[in-house]
Image (cartoon, rainbow, N blue to C red; front, side):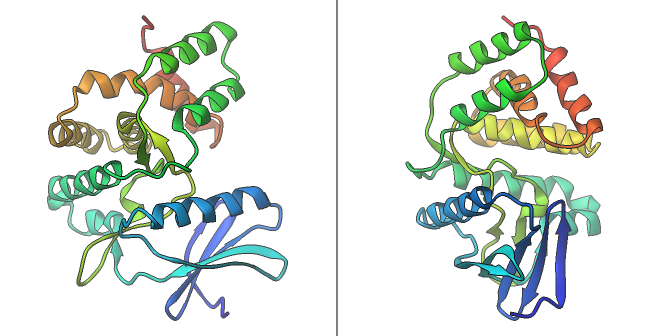
Length: 249
């Protein structure tokens, strides 16, 4: 495999293209279990029939773990939004439709979203009272088993020159409540400072899924707290702000 063409660089990993293959190479100190879990998640989502790159192999390159998948030709939705800002609402509507197609699927062997969030809330440095309130609110939310992407944002959608879009990066996939997945996407837009885009996304998601906006908003403190465990200091402060501004019932 040739690692000459870099597609993307992210914390702890670099993504390369080699012909028809996409090679995600993880840093040497990256957890083996996390690499294998990401590959397993993607394999399980493949079985749902969603339009995603197929896994070819999990291997080691120069002592580093790597996941090899199909390379998908095209531009990310994030690139298109940057190139055509006047089409933002059209692109968000497309994004929501793709997300809803994910939520229609079931993958019974994926980790349960509630279990993952409970673990993350326990790991936060929030005080015991706030953690208790978050655990209680999470436990009271309806239990669903829909496929949730967990990091559904425009950079993880590839628009191909011909044919349907592809959804990539299934490292955080779980099964659970679709409104939690939507809350996560809303927070991602907010984290990026795109308030207008975040607001339009929320409106579009709630309209197309026939979901009350208040219901998605109830998930925001839970999702923000669980997400605050990772990320830089500024992100943690922003996310924990969402936890603290909400009045708990």
